Image (cartoon, rainbow over all chains, first blue to last red):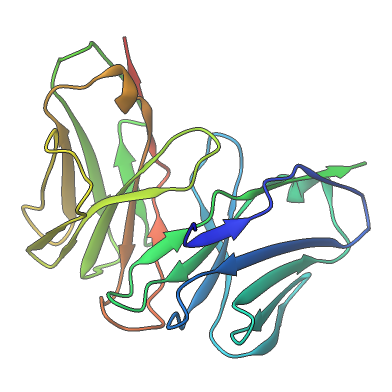
Length: 111
Length: 115
């Protein structure tokens, strides 16, 4: 079982719609969860992080965390063509606090 | 602006010819990381430094070495690059290791091509 799993996509959504990305993790002791955006050929860019169960909103982005289900998600509201990228979920490892990354979900926003 | 800088952005080397990649940071972060990322794959942690303390991942090949001469700079040395080492190499920094809320910030990456 992979430490962090994401649907690879591609996830295609029309402009203005909501994109929903999912991530599950295996380390029950993980405490910090991060979403990075990575444009093709570029490095990961931090979008947001979440530590507590529930929702956290930052602009058009909402992260949702459910530690009991070992599940974290990212919602992108009012999707724009500039949101077209690969979104990486990262989870801190409970034994040493380094990050485990998922392989990413590729999102394409259709104009 | 405080940032993480990587040089060169693109590096071409020949099979077996040693290569060094560079990372510098103006964030004054304690920890510096090196990741390898191949196409459509997750970034894979190679090693990290907490100040001058070097920490190697168990599955990092001996072909990969690193140096951190001071807080600002960190180098990745690939002693004998193989075709399978062609990848994006990412440097990241964070403030403090061992804190559950520690956040990593990435440099722009170096794309390595091995001929």
